[in-house]
Image (cartoon, rainbow, N blue to C red):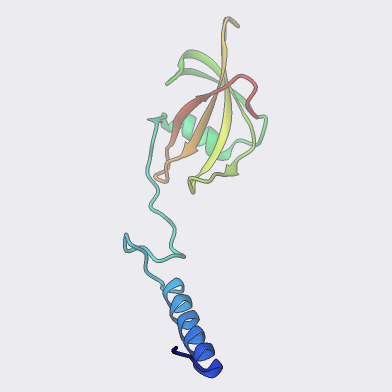
Amino acid sequence: MYQISTGRAKAAIGMLAVLVLAGCSSSQTRDGYSASAQPPVVSKGQALSQEVSEFLATGAGQSTRYFASTYWGDNVELTTDSIYYAASGRNCRQVTVNTMTGTSASRWLACDAGNGLWVAVRPLASGAR
């Protein structure tokens, strides 16, 4: 019967632990980005006009403004929520879109595309906050 001395077993386990930790602390991932690097920002969604983008970038939370022409249609009133940093790595905010006739209202998620323009990402459920 083969017996391993306690000292050799501890040394072998210690070496294995060092190798595992060294592998986990590697600064490169499979795709070549370092673990601390930000992922590239991808602009998803419909680009909004410069005028709407400026309003979304600079308006305070609960700001409201009328626009003659937007991605959501003509003669609409936009009301913004506060800007927040989203998991996508972009600044985003919820936008309430009201038609001037008052017949329809919808909520949308809009995010900074990183090029001075904002994009309408997707509609939100009516109870989303």
